[in-house]
Length: 256
Image (cartoon, rainbow, N blue to C red; front, top):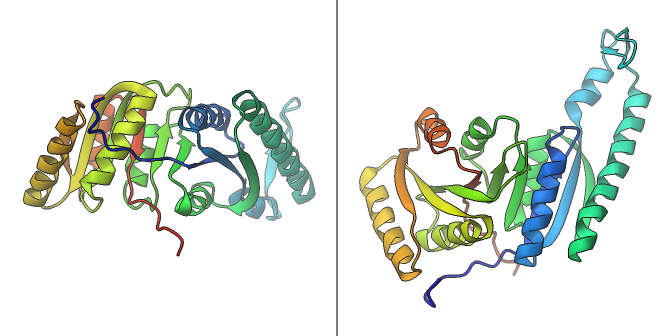
């Protein structure tokens, strides 16, 4: 890139871990990003509040893996399972962090997986989540994510084209610099989906974004999507089929 490139320093990356199989690929991708960006890696293991509530119901049943026989759910056994998974998460985190000499931490909490991860990301520069159905999940997160979120497919393979969802409420200087930085790290093309309801405001945003991209000697496609039409956003993501989706939010407030 040219010397006029605007830089955004990503200092802290948050990644969410749970029972889902796409947690490990998301962890490995987050560790790779942290290594490439010289960022701290903070992992959050979330014990599903929904499972805890279900285990407490008298009619709740679970199927044995080998026997396929139904048996009552045991809250104590579920707690032991959560503790075992948390230990596994710590070992996995240490395994991916050690070769890269990453600074890392792990916190265990209970609640809604998505809500806990988003809440933990309030002071982070980037939050990484894996999703089984990444296009719908990215479209849902775009309707109010308080922090910048990178949504990865279940495979965790994130090298390639990036789609960045940028609401016009976020200054184009920050949005374009961050999207370009992530695009460089992922090593593919960049498409910026500009979320707006007022087309005149969106046009002015895109004009400024174009000026910034030219000053950075960077190519990117700009596409306006109406904020009130989440189905149009999901359709755009499915059409573009990027390797990863970034939902860009305003930078976290600096501590006084």
